[in-house]
Amino acid sequence: MCELFALSSSSATEVSFSLDEFAKHGGLTDHHRHGWGIAYYAQNTARIIKEAHQASNSSCLNFVKNYSMKSTIILSHIRYATQGEVSFRNTQPFSRELAGREHVFIHNGDLIGIAENPKFQSKCFMPMGETDSEVAFCYLLTLMAEIWQDSHEPKLELRHKVFYDFAEEMHTLGLANFIYSDSEYIYIYSHERKIKDKKNKTKYIIVPGLYVLQRKCFKEITDTSIKGLKMPKKQPKSVILVSSVPLNNENWQALDAQTSFVLKNGEITQSHF
Image 1 (cartoon, one colour):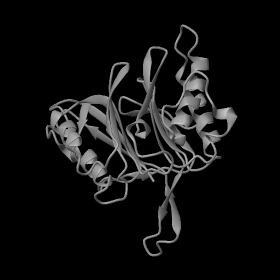
Image 2 (spheres, helix red, strand yellow):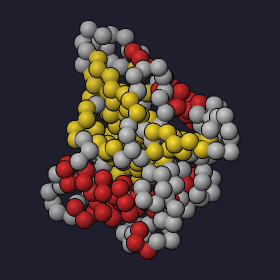
Image 3 (cartoon, helix red, strand yellow):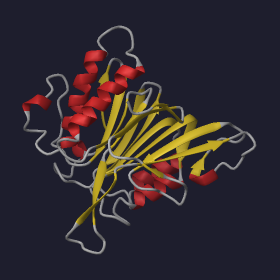
């Protein structure tokens, strides 16, 4: 299955250790060899860099790490293809413009039959590839477009409800772990993941869909690489990391199935209804 990663921070931050460890799963220490991508937000737009081959030996990913791009919102995806060919257009993150904002989406799981079901076909947002994930994203944006039609921005509670109802509907089709951003907030939905049993390769076991880690740093902390994140010196900071798997030995918390919350500036802004 694919793996997801997201960062929400109170000020612009770059990923160092966490992305390194995450990338190892993209073909080096795991089987996710079919593509990778990362999105850095700058105001209402996102810089998205992605490739349709494994991350663990990518010169482009080395450039990303050495270039030290920073953001308060970062989303990343490592692909293991189950639907759609291995190609750039099927590589996540996916993005679309809606209401003058760039919306970015990543998914882990399989949504069986979504592409054939006319209910989930959008007339306004069309998939460019063949993945179930992109069809789901286009459907989500169709739902979001209904509340973004007015000149005033919809309240967070309404945005979250649309996202949560969408995710609840999707998980009836299969495994559905989603991370989505509208350039202001990050929306999280954790369902569950299915992985091979190490003792019996013919069987699968169910594990948590996502894990979360929160870090608090204060002015007296000046180590710019504290706990795997490069941070500006003498600056207060709150950081939340979300990942399909714990990336180090810190206190990552497994999320229960069907858990949803919203992140902004390194804080949980709104929890599951």
